[in-house]
Length: 587
Image 1 (cartoon, rainbow, N blue to C red):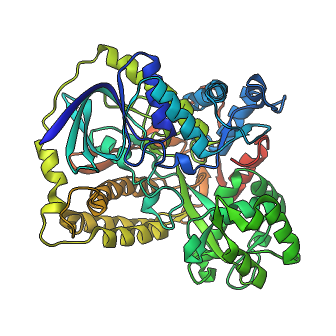
Image 2: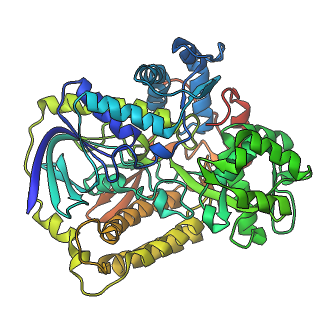
């Protein structure tokens, strides 16, 4: 039996983008239901964020904080376009820059806890952001449903009319009939290893939108955080060593003991190390060492103290993190490995996804009734992110929520039959034998990290796509759970998540194969040139009759024209760095 529920606007996702979208829709008078896969206000990437809310210096000052007085909307926008290698949708970048001061001010008025500020950011915590948004949503009357996984969108006459969900607490199905849906489900971090983000982030919203007929954009662009722990395993996926590199120094060395930075222009290294270019540049040069066979035993590079005495380095660490504790986790083992000279094995790990559901300036998808916000929407950052994703989720969430409520005013709800979708969702429970989801997921993660990482080649991508084809033909259709219980059966959820992950990864890999140039966080070793003559355009992915198609559309240019011509990848990155204002540091 499937329970049916009605609402004007259904928001899928319980992170910052979802809660701000729900608040935005309520601000327009809509009845709103927010559904989150995990615990309310404590799931997804948002609670784990650092976190900072970025805006330009003048916006900081308008909100009552210190801000660089020379830093204007124009300067901030210029930085976003340069770092995005001019693949940005400039309409979306303008919205981010223009509306970020208002989103910052309202968060302060709603009671967010501010830790400190810099020229272009207010620093807080992910838990403070979520507590603030949760409290505001409750006060405004948002209906919040936790521990409920949305499985698919419901489509009627070519428009989105709700969603089918699974109540994890009971194992029962819920059909939400709504006039508009906002997807705010984040990225697909779980498809990689090690995992830096929440393990709930498996690309659900992007895959659901694709199956509903929506277009995806920029799926080839994945930001990898550099210097993430690979080994020891108890800390795998932690960004603590990334933070140490920023605050306390240290060096990267390959298995031959060579200093990785020494191979590159020192001015470029210095600029990249102190700005957001570090993720793009250092992830790329680390991956080059690993692919050249000079990696550590666990396919990373070594993070070490360098030439200075360990105690001097450790004193800086203890100043920031007494007792070597980061976010209440004891990293004494990292201290021991650094003190001994052994070092810590680190490398690139997927952190942020520039691509997602293609949206316009109303954050409306190409299917009527569907909107997207946050990391599951195609971002304003183009080929490489600058500024905070935490501010992006507030700006885009508000826009999507307002737009969805306005759409719902004139829309009519429809009850779509869900019997076939329910039948398909229960297949893994009903099989007497089959493939264990965890086994498939581990193979998928290893292959994704290897073939769809910071450095790609045609051969690797084709081999990876062949693996995905094999998985779709065999394992994905034969997934089975050992336990037959329906309540909190996480193996069942993993089986359902795998379908989403495979579809999203195929979209990303096909886009990476189609883009025969290198730009931003997408580096093709077999096409190591940034080509503004042939490739200043977005790749659009569609699913037609079960088959993927790749098309292109021109970049929306409203303010600034990109440089012309073709340049080697690192030379182009250096050119973009030189055009960057260097205000605001790391975010």
